[in-house]
Image (tube, rainbow, N blue to C red; front, side):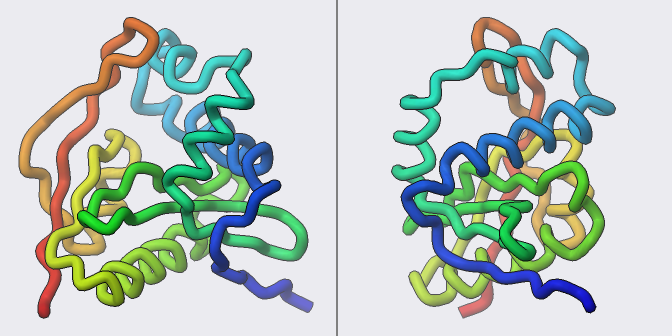
Length: 159
């Protein structure tokens, strides 16, 4: 029997599991598009659990649960900005990202958002493109002193 994929709001207590999703997505998937130095800066082995929990509580993402396992998460802010969008490596290409993107779009609609935008990793750019996002400009983030390239992508939503 196949276990159902459930998209639900973030709950206090999800923070550590969501870090596991983030870490595996970067260390096991994004690693094909970035240098080891960039990966180490972006997802260091040692991490500040308090700062992470504060950040996750601030963005209040949607979470994908399969059985008792958290396998992905994404947020959309009232201004249309998507700060985090990650799927655990073991669950890549299994519908988790699609379910999250569908939820982001429905939330954006509920919020009256007309423009979705994000700074998207090289790895995720083809996925975002499939959902109608366009690269506006090449960009980068400096993380722990290391430049990590990405692209500013946007999608105009129909009213």
